[in-house]
Amino acid sequence: MPKFVQIVKQPLPRVASQGSIEDLHQHKRHSLHILANLALHEYLRPTILASEGIQLFMDVLKGKNSDLRNDLGARRTATKGLVNLVFTKRELKLSVLSQLGEEIKQVQEDKADPIIAGLIKTLIQGTAYAAKTFSD
Image (cartoon, rainbow, N blue to C red):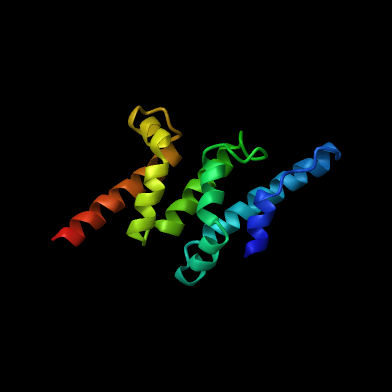
């Protein structure tokens, strides 16, 4: 699993043929997609968390990963990965939401991509539900 994280984090080489750059970009996107899906499995989440999975997904979502910065599909996948990774852990959800201030603002102003907005709303609503459940 850490290999998938390394693939996404490692910058693409700047001296390569255009075809190989595109292949490497696709490889990064596929690795990100695999990580997002693996985050659905409770027994794999500790490994993803230990490999800085939250930060990896956050960097892609916020455009800090230079190779995936302008890739809307990668940003959607990263948001999905965040939801999958933290949805069952209230403290992690709250931590992630506290880092998503700008994205939440875009959702409220209807400026966010609809898929990313839906995933962020899922996180917010799940947190509100969890808070209500635990307070009853």
